[in-house]
Amino acid sequence: MNKFNFLLNLRKYWQHFVIWMTSGSDLQVWHESDYRGNTSCWHAYDPITGRSVCFGSEEEMRIWIDKCYYR
Image 1: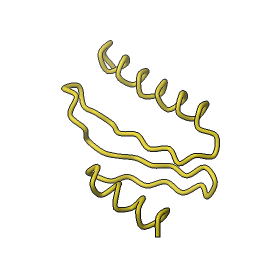
Image 2: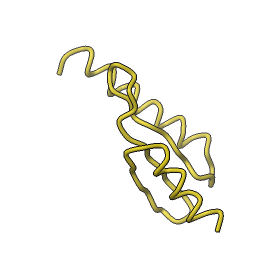
Image 3: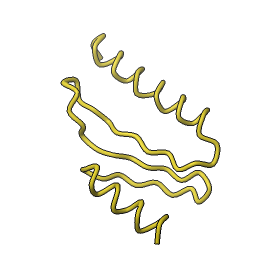
Image 4: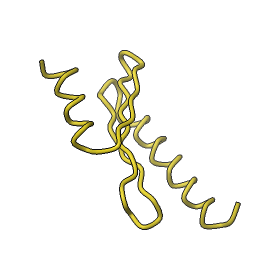
């Protein structure tokens, strides 16, 4: 693994750690980006139900949130 990939992985794990520490029981939503800053996928985790999902676009994520939490 080269230094650049190591730093990207470290950044990703740090983001997950910060989200975990600050979120409590709130729905957690975040996106992953490639090295150019392009969003590759959207993730959500509900700590109350233990449910997690991944979508290819922000719109798909919003639709899922609306269906599950704002019926």
